[in-house]
Length: 146
Image (cartoon, rainbow, N blue to C red; front, side):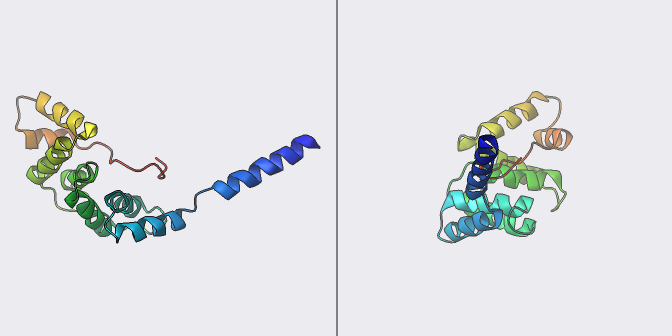
């Protein structure tokens, strides 16, 4: 009997601490509209993957751009992927390289690693290497499940 009671208490406790994705999205969006770069990035991720809101890649790019304008290091990395893969917008390898480079300049290790991989393909221009190796996984935030 004690085991069942303990299990019920544990389950209730976990449910009370569970994250409601819609509420989390609304919280991030409210901070994003106030100019908080981390919340702008999180809102971009949420729109990108459909977390707490229907997927909307145009809005994802919008919020990544706002975060990037404020110096966020992950936002330009994710923008670069949009311009690299050409799945949702026309590919623009030169612009993608600019965004990866901006992320690297801001200390983003994933961007540095990916650019180093591109540079190792010495026999081709970096834009062609990008097309060949495309694409790393986008960066996320702590609340999003990978």
